[in-house]
Structures are given as structure tokens and as C-alpha cells.
Image (tube, rainbow, N blue to C red; front, side, top):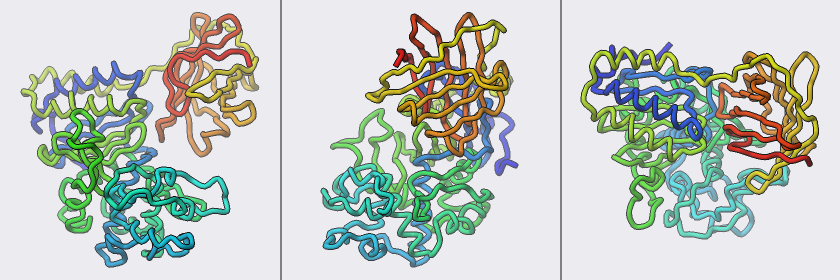
Length: 470
């Protein structure tokens, strides 16, 4: 059940239905670079619109990638408000077991500097150890300090992992469990999955799974300065502190048109026109516009997040400033919204000769191998990966979408729906995961011994690619 009542129509909230229809059209034209999954727009605490592009919805938990960072920041805010940590608490004090010998300089790496991406750690610290006997935290802290605190912005996801470690050490429980009674339960969010390191610490900077409805609840709580249903949920004053600029992520002046060059807070980005947001790779968004009293919550599979942000500026936020639309536009918007879907390939029932040789293509400097094979039960098997041995096996049925079996490589614990179709002597596939951006859809043609793919991929090959016999 939604936490938000709905406006009768967008115009009642001061938003143009015609402007929202323009967004849908622009999003359709941008599907080669941005594929929206779900979108919720709130104003004055009520729903202006909900858009779900089938097969996605706004209630299925979705991988948030770096939008997880904003929730990790909230955990740090609670820990400080409860006296468990201070903003100037250092990793040297809180995590002494992870500090290499002779590294007194790590006293300068504090909760504050980690949260604002200004710790000064070597950029190479943003990595995980290849030696499984080394802890993630120990690996990060083995790197040098290259800059004085808060003098150099460097986006460092493993720095956020250190925040998660610090809160867990201080609170005696991981940040997901720590946030359950303080935030998630109070917002009506069911216990979420938050992926963990081998040491049993929530990844912090990534790995949280929430729906766009959950994201909208968090955004609305932020908009009201931590209040939810008349109760102070987030620590008083934390939202103002966390979302203001703490470090410049630009040189000299803020970069016009660049939503990543407006300043950075405590795991929140400052945005153009005074907005702020948490965001995650491939377009996961929680954006708050205090001037308009509005929240935008989005799950997405975007290869171009810059274009995604431009679509918001040009159409979503512009719809607040446009003239009211006639009733006919509202009626048309309802139809447009109900029809949102990613079309499936049509099958003409014909046969096709699919080569079963292993083929290879170089993609972004890395060799990718592809092999087709018929399998039992009438499914088509694709093997795809960075080597013939390390690859995913994908099993697709013909003609209608169904749960698709994907084994190995990048796809463990990911649920897919997919199909293949044959039309005009070409092979078409559609493979989507309802809980993350992983998508592979497009056309395979077989030309002179080569396999040519032309389509869209997130987590899979993208664009037009020629695979030659290996």
C-alpha cells in the first residue's frame, strides 16, 4: 500500500500534465541510452504521478548502487546524535585493529572527511583486496594519504564502507539492523537486503535494495527535515548538515549543466537550481526540491546518467513552471502512463540456422566470447563472458516472456525474465531483471560467419558489436 495519497490530477498540485507527457515522449526517444524502470513524483506530500515501465514496478526492491550511500550517511547521523561517534572520530581511534603499523597519519581520516569524500586517501584505495585473507577495511587503510583533509574531492565508495565499519563497531550491529527501528520501520519500509563484505559488514556505499516507493518515503522525510507523520525520525539538524556543501567537486565555479559539479555534502550531491539528491549507478535517484516542496524517486537502467538528469530538468522540473493543461491532456497522460512498457520482440514462427561456433569481440579493451547452442526442452542457450571458461549461461524460451535461467559470471542471485524470437531470418532476445538494471535486448544477425549484435545492454554488451569466429 502506498504511503501517499494522490492528487486528483497534476494540475491540482501545480504541475502540467502536458509537461509530464513531454517527459514520457522524451524518455521513449532516449531508450537507447536511458531506460526508466519506475518513477514517483511527489508534491506537498501527495503523489503527482507514478510511472512504471512494464515489466518493472515501484514496489519490487531494486539494487540502489551508490544511492545506498545516503542511507549509510543517515546511520552515521544517528550514531553521532546518540553519542556513539563524533564527526571528528577517526578510523585510527575507532578501528585500531585495521590500522597498519606506523600509520599515525590515519588520525586525519575522520567520519566527516570520509562522508564528504575528502579523506585524502590515494584513489587506489577505492578497491577490494585480491588477497581474501586481507580485510576490506585493512586493504583501504593500507593506502597512503595523498592530500590534506577536505582539500581534494575524490569519490571513494570504499571510504563509505569505512563509515559502515565505524558505525557497526560503535553500535555493535550492522547499519541495516541499526537503521531498522530508527528509520526503516518508522517509514514503513520492510527489512531490506543490504549486501555485506566477507567480514560481515554492510557494504555501505552500495548493496542496499529498496523499491522506488521506499526511496520516495526517504525523500519525503528528508524534505520535511527528518519529520515523518508528525514525528522527528531523522536526527534533528542532520538533514541540513548532510545536504549542504562540505567540499567542492568543481574547480573555481560550479559547472553549469553538470549535476556532478555543484558541490558535495555527506553522501549527498548538490544539484542545479538548489536541489539535492542521492544517486546510484545506472540512474537510481532520490532527488529533493525544497523550493517546489517536491520529491522525485526513480529506479532506472541508464547508460547515460547525464542525459537522465537533462530529461528531469527539461521536462519534470519544467512541468512545475508550465501553464496548467486542459483536461484532455490529463486524460491523455493517464493513457500514456498506463501504456508504459518495453516492447517484446515478435516471433514470425520461421526457422533459423544459428551457428554454434565460439565467437569473440573486443569490447572496451576486453575480449568477450559468445556461443549459441540448442538445449533440451526447446530453449536456446547463450554462453557469454570474458573467457570461454568464465562465462554466463543464459537459457531463453521462444515466443513469450518467462523466468530465464542465468548461471554464473555476474548473474548469481539475480532473477531474470526473458525470451527469444525469430523474425526475418534474425534472432531477437529480451532479457531483464526486475530488481536491478541488468538488461540485454536486441537483434542478432549472422553474416559471413560473424555474429552481429545490435541492441542495448546494461551489465551486458551494448551497441553494435561484431563477434568473429574465435
